[in-house]
Image (tube, rainbow, N blue to C red):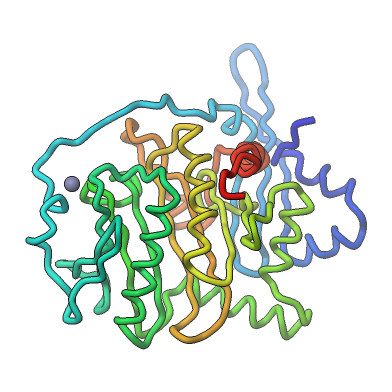
Length: 331
Ligand SMILES: [Zn+2]
């Protein structure tokens, strides 16, 4: 039987008391029925809101919206503009030079987000990366750049295509080291600290255990991967590892899943511990919608309510993900 996010309360009620206790320690669920009166009928829509009480992340799922087709049409497109990233010699460098990998290299960002900010420019023009070795190289180059950039809080972000915020088509990611930790990773760290004090447990382990029990989470050679219960937008997947480079296998499988259902524009971010500190690396990946559609996926609810309206069902996403993970050639 297909599990559905709109039936999360029913799914929970069939679980053991101990599990429900853990679930409701972190999450709350509100289910309601919205009614639409048409001239000839009344339509009922079941809406489920999942909230992480500790982080404040909150998502609304409407079964009517969720019933909309899952797949985009897989269209091929190519940009043949004059590409600045295809001419690497002209790109600026950092004071310590460039980090050069097999499939990518760093360039100093000409209009920086923050004081320590480099671009990781892929050697291929096409941003749709399909090979594991390329992803591995991107993370290795990021790691080397972070070591050179020195003290502070490292952060990795990749905006793929314009819907995700990229201004250049050519494949590229960003790596930063900030003086103060950025707000969302800092918030996660605060929640983990509070949780450890209160429950003597690691918050991330418990969040993963919940997703695993609900068949939303998988273990890939020590990396935990899960279709997130409170996605910031469509099809968010989280992966947790002890280092940056091993996350490339998780990303490879997540992107393979995305490509298989027609997703081309996405954001990837990695929350990282400071240099020389051992802690979890948390990767977040989210679909940013159909590249052919002009409507923004972020409306007022996302911008100001902090409660995202999401169409895709994490249970369906988890099934797609599981299929891809099962055929992982690197196993
Ligand atoms: Zn190019």
